[in-house]
Image (cartoon, rainbow, N blue to C red; front, top):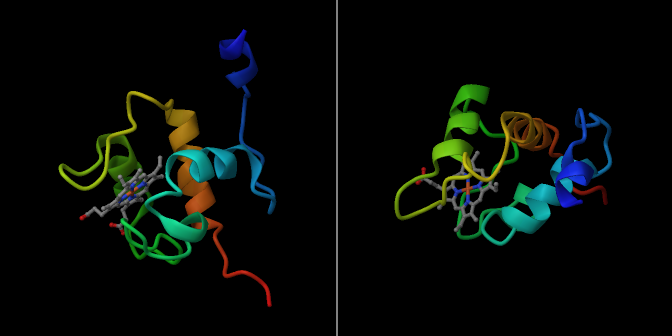
Length: 94
Ligand code: HEC
């Protein structure tokens, strides 16, 4: 069942894209380009000067007319994973 396969206890904080990276690519990537490294319809997220609470809150509640709210779609654990993913973003090598 789908629900079971999604019940992963924690996000791996490794350098690979990981589960949060996949989530980002499929859900956020069409607005936050290049995995969040570049501005698209939404701003660049890499090197954000915002604090974690702001990022978490923006992901949960979105911004009217600009970004959908994901608080209903994702668990707190998933949203934390997305914040960690954003913090870990680095420019592509080479
Ligand atoms: C429909 C396009 C769209 C999608 C999909 C989208 N965003 Fe956004 N996002 C935006 C826009 C536009 C803004 C700028 C909002 C504003 O004016 O403050 C934004 C802002 C943000 C911010 C705040 C950045 C800052 O410095 O102010 C974060 C964090 C963020 N998005 C993360 C995500 C994540 C994570 C996802 C996927 C779960 C996602 N977004 C999906 C369009 C989108």
